[in-house]
Length: 71
Image (cartoon, rainbow, N blue to C red; front, side, top):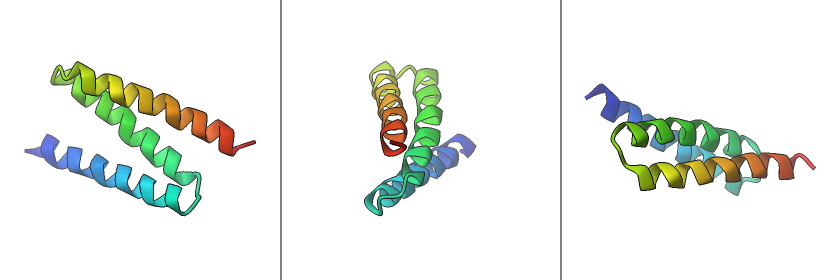
């Protein structure tokens, strides 16, 4: 029960990240990064390896985006 609510929190964080990216605010990448890291470990825990891989790739995209926006 608690974990399910926790997952929705990270879905909300991810959506907020999307909002900030639309507004051209780098905070969006940091929010995505937080959500992605949690979702990597969550999906590994429930053995959803394809989903974990997707979030690992998203994490690298976030890091790349942070560096590119910092130029």
